[in-house]
Image 1 (cartoon, rainbow, N blue to C red):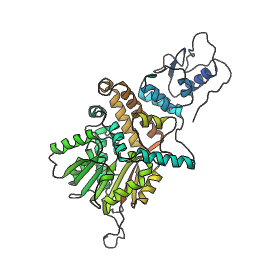
Image 2 (tube, rainbow, N blue to C red):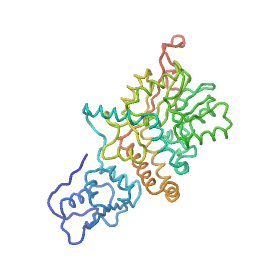
Image 3 (tube, one colour):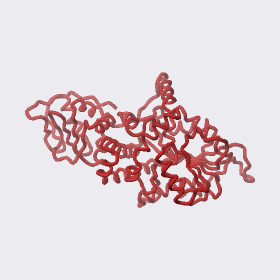
Image 4 (cartoon, rainbow, N blue to C red):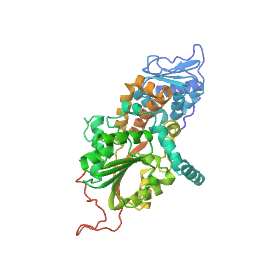
Length: 437
């Protein structure tokens, strides 16, 4: 992944049809030559400026200004996460659209998905770090650092229900709001929700799925969250909807849920990424404990592109951990399924919604881009810079297949009564007639 400067022969190159504009009268060194070659190979024209020089076509629609010369080597190596970090700190400025910026970022990063098995000692260190980072009190701090940033800020670019997870574009012409409602209904259909069922929503967010399930499917719903802001918001929604008798939300860690076999159906949407690799077995075992025999669980979560790493290379993983989701860890879907099985659950169905999340993220990014002034007043410049790159950069990751999004449907397959002649141990009908499409 690291791209080293190629010394080559000193010569002038034309970039995007325009002569390079290095510092007047200076001779090109190996770094300058490597920059010219790199700029020439980008999918969109870009003007690059740094103290004492510049390269690329002056008329380019995208201009990146580096305020420290050392960042030239970072760019040449394709460490786009480190460049993003510099942008948040104000050491790098971007003038241009997020879509053109991400086209360049994708070309610079090449393929940031780590390959190959981890060294045994690294596995041990990674497991220890994961356990330390995902103690209950620390998870609460990390979740609140993200979700309690500003309700008004999130409301700027999310849909009216504030669904902060992958939408489902069942039809190409759907709006963001319609696609989010389609996702909520997809989950309810997969879970075969029915009136009177006890439904648990782990990581309930701003309450969209919790209320949708209660209002459209008649379930008795419980939601849990670690975010104080989300808890207060959902509590207000429940009261306003007159659902206090059937719906409740608790400020609670999933590991603190008491009892056993309390729920007929469980959904975990967008929370899986906060669990931690070292806690996955316990996570699924906890859900198995809470689910009645034969009941259904849907786990909706982001999956890593590589088998043995919990993040992305090219500095992307560090950027996300530092500025967006502290403590977030990803696993490949194969490892998620293994943990699910070790937790005593049987996998019934898996669906990859990767292109849907790319489109969702671009919709969020576009909505934020037209409200930058308001967003800046709500969060400040550094947070706004981080989120602009996070939303557009994540869209790029899902477009390129560096990340994926899976819905895993499972059951607690204890011995339970089955329909006559139907040798199953689950409420699942083992058809897909209940699913759209």
